[in-house]
Length: 180
Image (tube, rainbow, N blue to C red; front, side, top):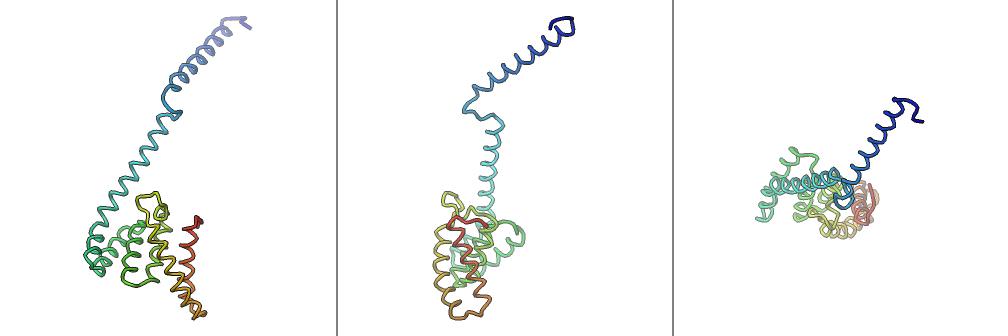
């Protein structure tokens, strides 16, 4: 086994590598709850990105909320339309649009806006999320099932009502934990 200098050198290097690996593992074992620093860094990065997104949403849609609270729904919708064109992939604009439309009595359009927002970001259905609109969406679903369901039953050939009822049922399914 240890016949010549090459064998002795190879075995010595192998023992040195195994010793170094054991030392590295022993040092990393004492670093906490089993998570390495890279895993902790990624979790912190995700949390920071989420917080930054919440702050951005607050800044972008703050003027719309102010107009809405002041009772100026039309101006809020105009400002919101501008923001929706500028940030088409942001779900918060669709959710706000749905809230304003519902306050104005446009239930069918409100349902469509909420569906777009929920499809873009399911956090609005998560009760633990700071973005949660779960209670409002539940009330919208209940109201939609009564109102749109009754109108659809009275007019079975109306495709627009059938499509709106389908959207209400989509929201109902997502509220129950269903996937897309």
